[in-house]
Length: 363
Image 1: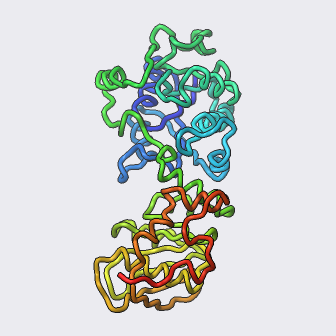
Image 2 (image 1 turned 135 degrees about the vertical axis):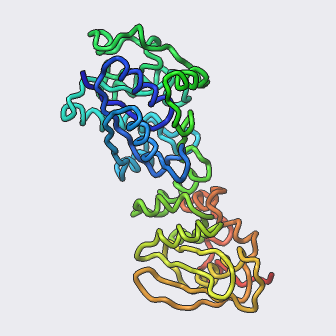
Image 3 (image 1 turned 45 degrees about the vertical axis):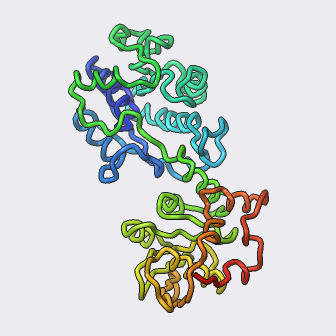
């Protein structure tokens, strides 16, 4: 008998797959990638970790990408967000619907997940699990090996395809039982027991709200930029991203596209800055002074290379640094810029004419 298993590469899903293999079930793993995954070391990544686990367990794995259709769910989830921008219930429904579409072609008769009752506050309490199962179109076809005894028997249990007595009744947020099981079953290379999602991070959530409010034509480049640097909403149609270290400067420089403008220091040490909108003369100067503010060098003139992506390259020279208190008013993570875009509240300077947005300031 065949089953599809959701395999994140984390501890719970790995154990769920192992329990099915030990009962002779032919498992195909499906792993969903997301730009918001934060559960594994940067050098590995969720996709690579899931492949490693699948290889160790001896199961085939397919990778599915959460694309722009998923981002529309993140923007406006029918079942709402958590504390951040995490649409946990709708995310589960989305993945399970995608899996259901794969069942016939893979010859699978049921779906296996690593869910544990009561482990995650939004999506793994009983009512949420029932909603997810019903709206995914998989009612009775989802087997949760780690908490099976806490739910009515699924179809494979009722039909004797899976021995229910060999399944578990784990509940709650502690993972002591799972860690002990992993040791006994020889599962060693799982990244972190609880996983992680950047959509729960308050800074990423603020940046994402700002993106949805101010950039209706966003794409995956804009999404990946949310995870890099300091973000400033200078005007409703102009955002500036400033690197915090060499690695981020390189990342920002690699995530450009036509219409963006890249500023890099020419005669001083400082960060790269990427403008993702219309840059006119007053903002031009403001961005240069912002880059200078994040440099420890003191110069009579701060010279920057200004590259309009897909256009011309020029030189910009500023003679002062933007005051930190001015910069702080534009920082997206404090929510002010997002409120400005929604018309609820304006950060100082945002509603001024362009020539007044970033006056020259003395150090």
